[in-house]
Length: 517
Picture 1 (cartoon, one colour):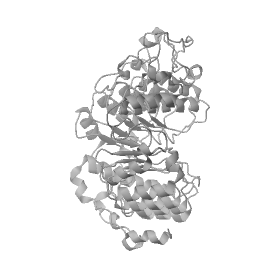
Picture 2 (cartoon, one colour; picture 1 turned 135 degrees about the vertical axis):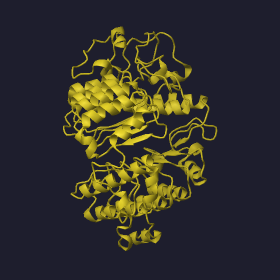
Picture 3 (cartoon, helix red, strand yellow; picture 1 turned 180 degrees about the horizontal axis):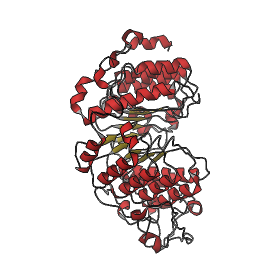
Picture 4 (cartoon, one colour; picture 1 turned 45 degrees about the vertical axis):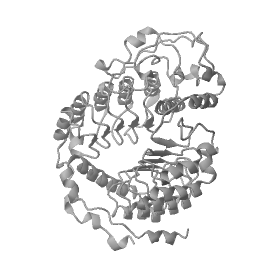
């Protein structure tokens, strides 16, 4: 039971620190970034009182160091007092950096002016995939800021996720561009033709190539060509994403040397001109799905990401949803056989999985129990309920490789959350859990939240929990997540302290029998 070992991981005082006097100072970390230390791949200053006191100064130093850094992949500046001035510094760094994949600015003071600066910086960026702007002091971004983000997507084809809260109809246009970038990324990984999805501003540039590693992407306007392209491009008039832009914009697109709060003047863009040359034979199939299927049938190669979407591989040919050629069962079988090529499993929005959500979740749980290669598991919108969550919890209790689990848009309730908490009490690898947009709408209940809090007496690896919590106990959950983040930061940046952190104590797996499933 939880009570039998309460507080075991809190017994060692060495894992705690007084906020504002960290064992490794902010200046030392910035210096390592400036020296381009190859061992430093993640920077985590989240909830740092030291950083918050001199936020603009430290952000400026960090941004300057990041301009020349090639090894840092993730930056976490959540709850660090970063404002619009700091966002401008970071925007300048993003315009020149070619390594950062994830930037977390949650719980700061970034306003619409700072977000506009980030948009201008991202117009020059070709690497960042995830940007978190949730829970800012002022969440009213305004149409001016959103227009800058829409304009940014005329040059950026790599940003896949933006976490923020929008109260504007322009969010539909932004989501459409994010979906477009996700499809471009998927086609790149699978070796499929994707230039038909690129905006006019980047066609024929480095972003259109299969690999752009180590080269700086400069947004330029491709020379307009005439080609009788079909009308399958998404909403050309609404978003201007495929409209030809005047050459003057390419010559001075978002100058980062003088970022300020002034709007970039809008140019009147000519209407989209169809191109004269005939499109490739695959593009004449009609619908987007038909074209994608024909591209996949002619492509070759392998991928390390296993998804229920069609994939061009000799072992798994192109298929429609639910066909036997590459069914959900086949993908689960590869996980069960511990295939080293399978490191990411994605069943999101799979109609086949939805038809038997809890049953497939149970099969996948059994496969994960003995798997040591899968790192990411995406089960978004797969009709998984409390029974399926209990099955996954049992698998997580025995798995030591999965780091990210996405369960958003499912049917989990308080019993499912309790089961996951018990499974995570024995887990030593999961870093991120997404439980957003459940049918319960955040009504987890006090008993389930108490189980989550109890879980943290055994778990020291879960650092990110994405959910909607309508309870005062959310403050306690955030405090324990911050504790785990600090432990993780010390493990990565001060390896000598890792031996001082006790491992979590496993609980009896037969505790799942008390759920009655």
